[in-house]
Image (cartoon, rainbow, N blue to C red; front, top):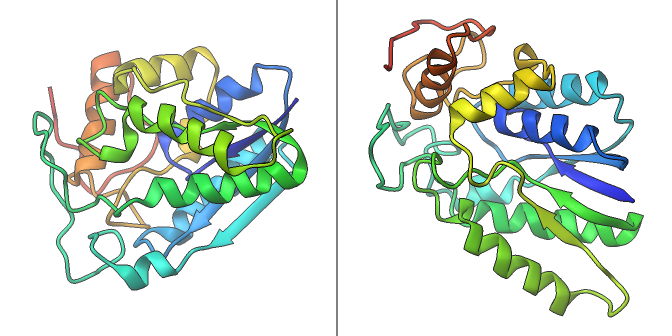
Length: 226
């Protein structure tokens, strides 16, 4: 079976790729540039992850319309990126309105064309900053949308292997599968050294701290979060 992997270049998509690589699947990787602050670093990591897992069938998409729409600190430099809020459930400024629905729609279209039966995405519900498009119910219902909106003989399923995991468990799973964490990027603010203080950096650093392993990427500052 063919499978499409949505690979942002982040830690979650890396571990999702490592999980998919363990299955007997023909892998194809998709990456979306949407005008985010760290698009060049994320694209670089996407390519490095694909090279590591020898994924040759790739699709890089330009979705700059998301930056034109705005509403997120990832695409609007005038908006401040949310800092660490590890206990908060409020939706942070880094939420890109309905982004994952757009990504999934592109992935479904490509899957129909190349005959893929699965779409892997590294969504995490319990430790995902309260993003509404990272909830299990969203993906369950999107699978129904796929069923209704594709050809009758099409069978495509969204797979979310990390959906119920905590970040520290994702790190442990990646270590178990020898995922190259140095090839991933989670920072929302910087493309040089990771900032260490945005919400995404904080969650990643805390996850590594909880496992007792040092995150292999370099940070401007490396606060303690536990």
